[in-house]
Length: 184
Figure 1: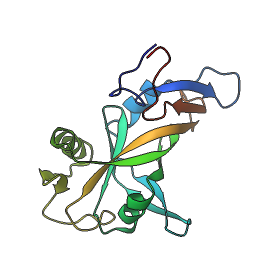
Figure 2: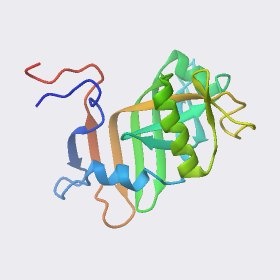
Figure 3: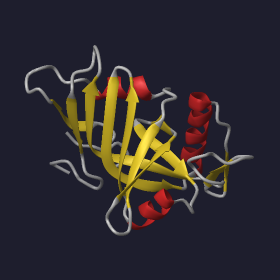
Figure 4: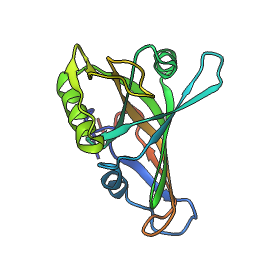
């Protein structure tokens, strides 16, 4: 099976039940469950000395991937500028989700408009696209002052732990960015 560069990483290449025997939770179910969830997410980044830095963020799901935003002067933005590795977590019944991967800054105006629309639909947070970032009349507590840079979290591995039915604890592995499928 071949994968176009645009879709690489959107779908997991494997889904494994963490108990070793149950049917894994479908990634599509996870995305659908979180797509309009106004939950608080947590973003972990790597400080210059290697220590972790964790802060609450508002995240939205657009085209199957989580997006976060933050002011360029925040510690988390400075951390991502030097080391793109990150982890995003969220608890939203009946699922606890951990997404390990990398963050890529988004400047594409069409994508930024979709992200802005998702923030409005999910949290009622109205932002506008201006100069390759999001802007609003006021600041957001954990995002710092505007403008807000938008980052797409590109998953490498995700873990879903069920806190109730229908979620089976599952590990999803994703294709590495730039990886070409066999036969291409």
